[in-house]
Length: 360
Length: 150
Image 1: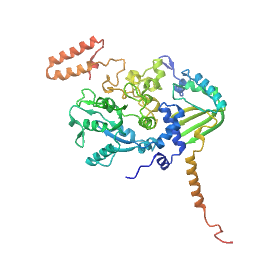
Image 2: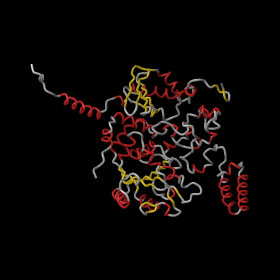
Image 3: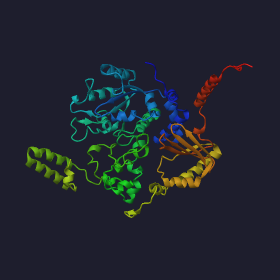
Image 4: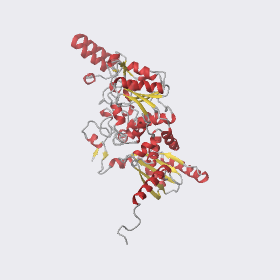
């Protein structure tokens, strides 16, 4: 196979000037929270770094993360950076399939043992290996085998980082995050459902230029997950003034007031959505009038309901309520007892419970 | 008229409201600029301040504009979206704002320098320019005599 062109040749082929590249590096350096004078070093590293071999494994996922990272509206330098790495295995994108695809993975592992970057999207089922296999290999086995020779792992998306939607209650497949299986390799979590493309390229650029970025307690790069969406939300002044939309079509909603009462999880969600935004910087969910779902945080799917304000307690009573419904269908009296038990627990925890809280 | 006691004015009331919100960071930044400018004069050391690296609201921008003012040079760079580069009313202090193709802000800086790096022609671009120029000259290379004869 002919060697892939390096970044400067790719830029030239796309008609991007050196100034355009320097501009991108200046913005990328700012995004990575590095000192601005580091921009020339970032540029130099991106141009000259040896293209690392990247093996991308997709497990229990919806392919939304790959879509987010590859479906840009126009050729961007993010695309070029992805072209500048040697993506040796990605079963959604590669032409090869079956044994040929697996042979490519094994060859890349052999050629770059200890040096390749492993990117994972999707969670890993540990309940029954048959829940998710690739070429007859269980996700668990493939992850362990491939991680053994990786220099580092990037868990892309909330499923790989925290278990995500497959992990949501009642977690029928026993889905877990990469970090619950692999404990002897550096792991960078890039959560989001899906993550913002430029965040992914920023993490990759940081890895290429300066190695593993500084991470928070959840393994997320601090540069992108250091502040809550609420901290940088353009609707924040309305929150501070106590002006809230109470419905999706009321006067407050039309005026663009704070969406806290409609269930916005911005105050507890760390991400750069409010500043970097989506779709080439067009907008982000709150700007489109919808509360933040909190998708960069663990267990966001089970965090008490998307349209319930954060101030509404999100305890286990909903789980007990569901158990009551299920059990009630079989043995009504027992179900009622379970519901009472759940309610008693909630009362003991000083939580207010009503019929709406039992809807889950 | 009002909801919860807040008057809603016609026009872009939101932007107007935002333009008065200050984090208090503008004046410390301006003092830092003064120190960096003194360094530039004494030692030639350039500096860049990333205005996206700390909370900096529209009200802070307003203070920055009022104190620094507008200088003699304004340039627009068209590369992957526009960039606005302008010398402020304080020579040696430049404002550099990068935007993407949709006009959204990518990054914004104060540069304390005699010439922002991004304004200079880059060697690689100059080399490509030379190739382009020679190709265009080759296209124009034709007969040296008048084809109709004289």
